[in-house]
Length: 37
Image (cartoon, rainbow, N blue to C red; front, side):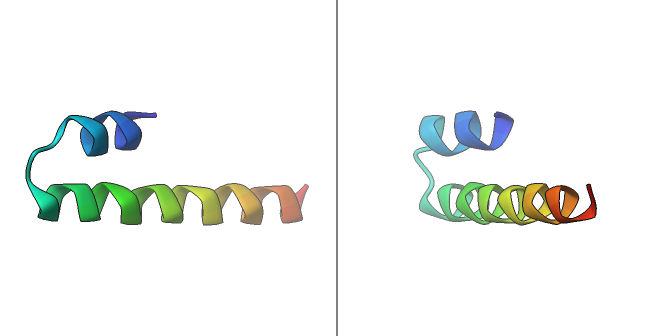
């Protein structure tokens, strides 16, 4: 959730890119947790 907030409120393109990368990593972690369960 915080990654979305940072990305949407940032005027700096680099920060937006980092926030997007964080969202991708978070989604990958969620998938891995589901695979463990």
